Image (cartoon, rainbow, N blue to C red; front, side, top):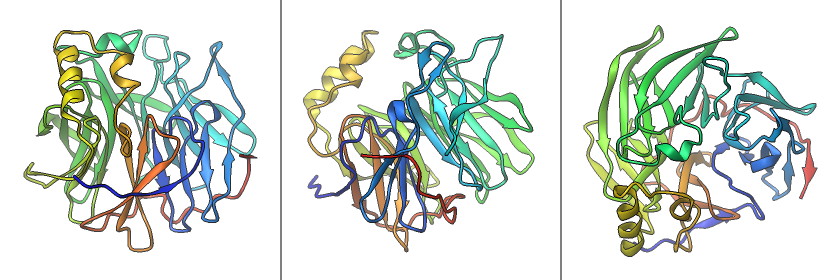
Length: 325
């Protein structure tokens, strides 16, 4: 598939998660610097200094923008917990502890009802023990009024989630299950058990998900380096791909043998879509996507066949602060 993206950003480090706003500002995970702010005029800022948590550096994975302009940052390092970031720095928001231990947090979502959702990929330490076909000990939790409760568990390496109150579903990316599941959702919460919504193609390890204006789910997949659009009945259309068959075969062989590791996740022979991990809609008409990724130092921007949905933070204005780079 021919791919000719534009790009945003430069010298980025592990820009795993991306957020956009109506002003044209873009925010992405900043690795050990919390969040990176990319302004419409091209200026860039690290929004946090390197920060320790439980004796180890914090590492930003998922990020969420709150209505007051602060950020929530999922700390995927071993110190774990959910962090909050504002001009005064990066500090603990919630320890997310079960049984007294703060787990590495993969993703955070703040929805339009004010609920904060987090995901924990696995209860194993290290998480790499869950890089296989048979482990399903990830979970989804909600934080409200300072209290956390687990609302879905038994998931195969939980990654991004999206709350679609219009259709009545919470969608869940299960990376090592190579699937997207969903649970019935309304304003009172979740109802019932997860059910498989879409089993992804071979090599498509779904990481990030979003929902467009027609209620279709867009899936950003590592390894296969693809964006797949999934209709409400589960039908799939690949809208961008840099799938390399030999690479997919080698990763799938390692996965089936229980040998998946950093050699498969920290490398890719792709040149343009370098382990796609998240999606954010962009532009006045929301007809572009910015693609977060694990391996490039910039962000691909691609056209969409159908406009996206404005996220809850679309109209939030964030002042300029941080260290330019």
